[in-house]
Length: 252
Ligand SMILES: Nc1ncnc2c1ncn2[C@@H]1O[C@H](COP(=O)(O)OP(=O)(O)OP(=O)(O)O)[C@@H](O)[C@H]1O
Image 1 (cartoon, rainbow, N blue to C red):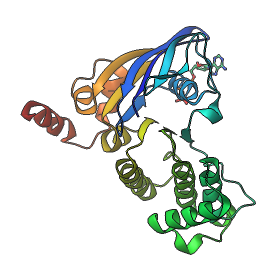
Image 2: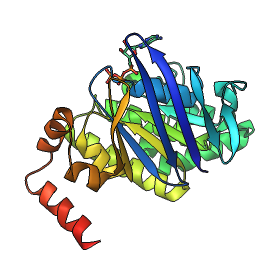
Image 3: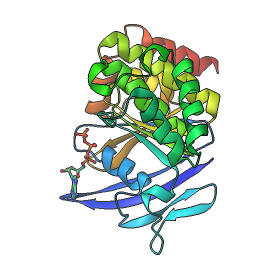
Image 4: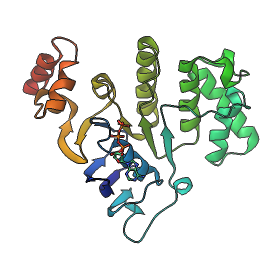
């Protein structure tokens, strides 16, 4: 699935403008200061935010433009947010099965699919637990499984690791990367953490007050920060990382 987007969305005081293509199985990271417009873009891709102008296409089919607005439930785009929004009255297996049903499976097939996901994510033991009895990391894993069980064409990931402790966040990043590689689903991930872009993304788009200030392969963007915001982001990378990035680019 190739996602192409050219968007203009007016906000108070500025307009969010961005243009990008995410090829099948690739990951685009969106970074930027608070209020820069990252969630606005994610919401436009999901269909819960209308465009002021522009066009969003998935494999050449228009999802949104001046005349078209395909509603969210018809887009086959999964959204994984900071809050996992699991159904509190359903156990882990049934939460995942709900995703599979949304993807078109009948009840029995959805239950089998949920069981497969629980095994794949190492969560077999908590199949019968309701969300209130799970840790934050377990809830995020269930939310990931539920989103992927619906077989989305694109997965949107909006700050899903922010509430996890460092170790759980590392595990979750690995899991997301593995599952995206396994399924070949394209993804857009919003994060404040340089580590997320570095671990997960192929390209990085940086937004500042709605405008793209950087856009390109992650290593290139980190190697040439052109704004105060990006210099501060690069300073959070582990010592030596910028030099390694430069070597990787020079050696490529
Ligand atoms: N429905 C709306 N109508 C107009 N402006 C809005 C609306 N929702 C949010 N905004 C404004 O749009 C701007 C971009 O918000 P957005 O949530 O996209 O930023 P963000 O980069 O995701 O920020 P954060 O990192 O804090 O989540 C902000 O100035 C916000 O106040």
